[in-house]
Image 1 (cartoon, rainbow, N blue to C red):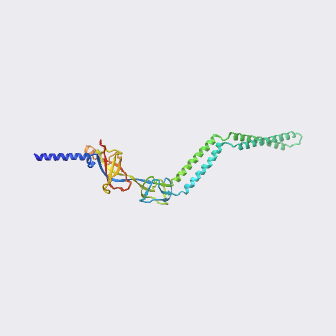
Image 2: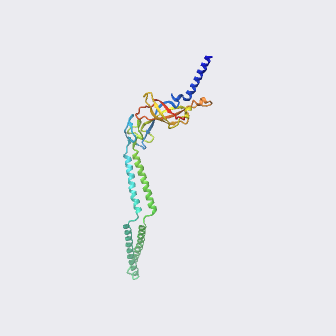
Length: 331
């Protein structure tokens, strides 16, 4: 009888321990901590020139540390500078055209047009008097028909010249058409936009690091042709790093983005790194073809990314790590 009681007590203890491990087995020694295991990973940035030109310099090599905004490479700029200078000259020329039309006719030009009209009037008067004099003397035989015709033609030409000069004076007084001014302004804006594009292309000839990190790969070399589709360098972002861990489905409801965590490694015994949960996968990493029982459902695991601060850059890519996620008291 005593043996049966002892056997039952041991069985109950084992069952209770199994249930507790199932619920809190990943929690280490505390029910308020979820303990997960994974490996260090790094985010990587591939840097490429935003232009098609031959590479002039690559300033860094594998293993070099780079800072945000640091120049890491340049392109040849001879053609780009010439294009920018040409675009700038077009802008300056069109500015003068636009200003001339906007300001209208200068007073001196109006005075000149009025003087041309007065000269044409005087010429017309002289031509008319000469024609009338020859016409009166035609009957007495003093004037030939040829001279009379020439005088008449000169008189008609003078009349036409006066009309032309008068129209020119009218146009000078009215000034340029609004449509011409609008066209000149639109052309100026187009040229200015082209100049901005040329300046931006020239700026793109300098490649800068967008973040602090370490150069992982130097892919292209000086003399090679760069393009937006061909990365020149790959840079590993060293701060923050992150640990890829996997949480079981029962723990999924207790973990949420933004929770604080600590990260430890075997390489630095006793040292903890501060971190936080930054990503929880919305889908399971390993899903059975058919889920029919609760036992199978709880076998699902979900990827969790825990970001970690490593200012001393001690953690290395692929390093095994232990993550402890502290739960709130109500979790």
